Image (cartoon, rainbow, N blue to C red; front, top):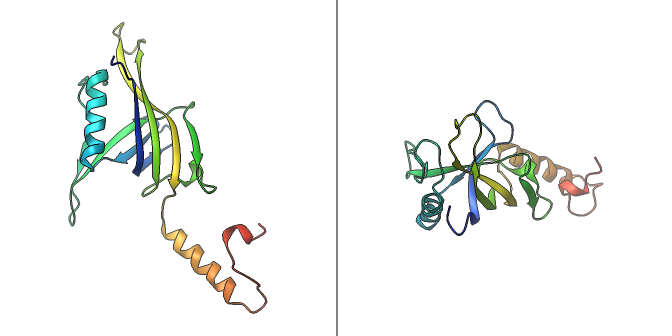
Length: 166
């Protein structure tokens, strides 16, 4: 493995967040369309020889929407020991498409019954900070309802999610 087994990414956009293992393991997929981010991932995977099928080759997926530019994606494994924090009251529950995060992942050696005695290098996110949460249609609906509350005559001051007592 390389001298640095750690990668740190700042302010990257989440594409998918799979906190529960539904047969494919737990993971967080980020947008690495930015060339600097993609190069950092490619170099880290190569330097640490990470991977099962193609060690040292980053498994970056391409998504080509009908309209728009190609989006490059990379999935980091997560586990029960991955730590989460968020700014301004955000938490792990705010992760999803469009959220922005800072992330640190580690490369590690493993050897188990599935590798048949062969030592391999895996990777997993060890810490994630949620900078901004996922944006959904529910956010717009909630804002609309909160604005309606602010329009009533008996409501004083600005109404926010935190000012509602339930």
